[in-house]
Amino acid sequence: MKNFTILIFFLFVSIKGFTQNPDLFRTWQLTKVTIDNVNYLPEDYGYFPTLDLIDDTNEYFIGFATPWSILCSSNIFGFQSNPNGFLIDQNNLVCLAEVLCQEDPLNSPCGIIYGRHSEMYLEITSLLTYAITQNADDTFSLEINNTEGNSAFYSSELLSNQDLKFSEITLSPNPTSNLLFIASENLEITSLSIFNLSGQKVMEIKEATSEIDVSTLQSGIYFLEITSEKGTVIKKFVKK
Image 1: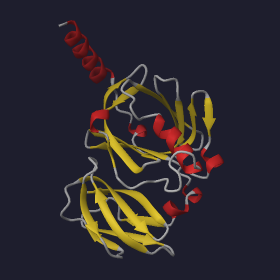
Image 2: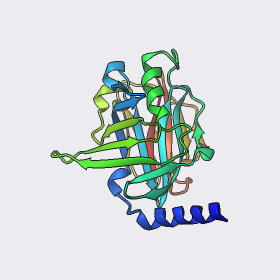
Image 3: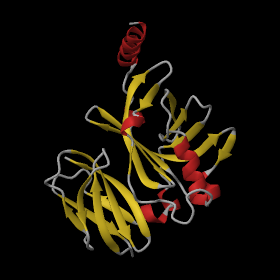
């Protein structure tokens, strides 16, 4: 009975104390991650992890890459304030099968920076706290801390020029209700797959194309996996 009472109290405080901050829900660019008091800077490794925090009509999700997967996603819940924080539903964490760091998921530059970044969130069942700062240039900075004593720092300004695979591909219109057009410069697309927020593959196209009919998809947020001769990249889009 005591544990049950504590749980009810925690949920009550979480729900009552949480004021949704819309600035939290966006794609964030990692600028530094500190693990075991060691700083890891993306520019030192040539790879630039991002973090997706998603509000899908009052269902909340987190998305990030690991050395062994181009995308892991799960629900987030248990929001609270003072300090601001949330929990990750580790029981429903889903990772796509595509390996991100093909050369060496452990010791390569790709493996090191994506590994340290994903360490912030994998198997963390306690509260993640965060702080958002609005900068003078109207961009935002985000700091997230876990109870292991580790921290990750982000910017709302995406450094797409640092990652050619991301900057070469654009989706439009986004959001879309019918057709999704894919624009790429000097990039030959070989196949496309669409995944929902639960990691389920809902569509696959095994041919080169620059448009997808998504009219049969339910409204919500999806991830488009684009495979080309240069590798695989994930893009997020919204189906209205």
